[in-house]
Image (cartoon, rainbow, N blue to C red):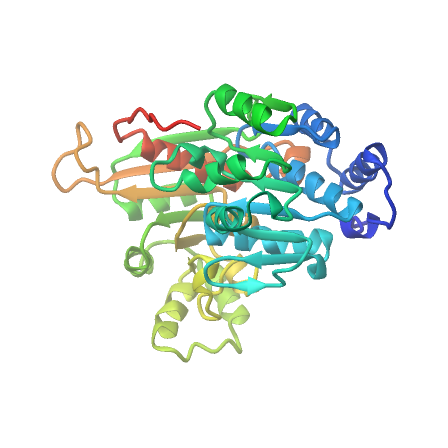
Length: 404
């Protein structure tokens, strides 16, 4: 039996922190999940009105802790914010929170969209909250703030958007989350001194999502066919521009992606779907070959069929998905279509041992999970983040000097 929406457990009155935590954990149990120790520790600290710095690996359930704080705010009749570095991630969280807490209680504010902006729970980009904090200062009604991807705090170009709320919102309780956070001792010390509120740091190096990866120098078509033969379908091929995505999809139409039976099944699922735009005809050809197309939700189009909203049965049957991807996007498409392996293809750009004209292919496959983990985790998110780290390792590290 499916769990009732979390929003149904919000009642009028002041139930107290113990009752709020009990209701939330009862709902979590009803969904069939069992919190990890790090999740329990973080929730307990938040219910005691302590700031929390949560640094746990990708796939370890930081979003569940954030949901617990939003639920606390709803039960108390107070406002909460969720901030993210990109519009796509704010978009994704907006829809997830609408499902959990009710669309009438959730709003979104980004550079592109303003939806229910006076809602008690507002999803926005980090810069939006920073601008509000600069404009209104301590008078801003923001009792609870969740700052996702908090490692951006040290970014030279955008870090101020994560720093400004910490400096100006002295009465706010913060949940600061990141999977790649260094030592936050100085930040925690300054935050505690400025706000007079204890800061709890919750860290864990236990990765619930097993990962394996390898590098390949074979052409993309060979790499894809080898992974399909190894039962790693569906695959997701990551690109960083729409042009690269379209060219790759075109190049794979002739590959051994889908069997004859699978192509017939896709054709039946596509019956009645209109492909009447110029690009739609190309997309139709890709789909019939077993190659799906995905771009971020900000580029939504019925023909492109973005995951989560507009996905058809045909898209779910694809062996291969080629797409542009940004922060949070791989998790979105992975949850929708059950990605088993992720492939990043790039020109080596000076990698040692890479001869002229050879392509370095990086393939990451996520290992099988236990049933409990499969029910509770997005293994595809972890694959995407891990691959981004592999790419980052090629760049020389810069020592950041910007402080709090």
